[in-house]
Image (cartoon, rainbow, N blue to C red; front, side, top):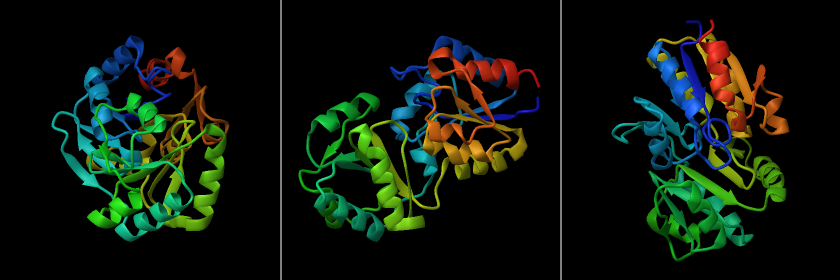
Length: 270
């Protein structure tokens, strides 16, 4: 088998618009794994929010979360690594966002913290399997009070503001942070030297898998490093226009079981 590993995003790539993976995708993944392939979910989600889906798919071993900042075990939830944002860096961004009245959340180990209950928080809760910690204060104060180095910071905003936040924060902080998006209404902020690509490379090295033996599948800007790193970089047809530019190949959309198509027509054919 030419492609020994598939690294795959979850939301809007493997899952449909309702955040469920289809039975067709599930069956294709099972065939690939049965043939000796390693299928790795690589997502921006919290670990606790992706493990139930990984278990539904029948996967074992590692899962990549928080855009590559964490690699964890599916069966135990144990973190193998956790790349956090330094305290001073996180506090600096938090003070800026609080001063501007921007709604955002922070992630500490596998919990997420919100300043207060808001409609944004209620919308986000649909995508996670755990309740938030409610700080009851601006998050810059919470970070300072508790000396927190978060894994991730996430802005929830109307879709038309996403590109502006990415451009502004990237210009202001440069390589200190990686700022991108995973869904149309979020801006994700992680440490600048973290990416899905680095996490995939680390797992490939662990299992003796070469770069050219990897397929990566995604849909968003946070998938671009991983897709560009892989031997075959694939974007689903519903990917954002900017993300599509990084693809070697475009497969059917998430609603049309694009992941199953790649497995059946490429991974299991070579």
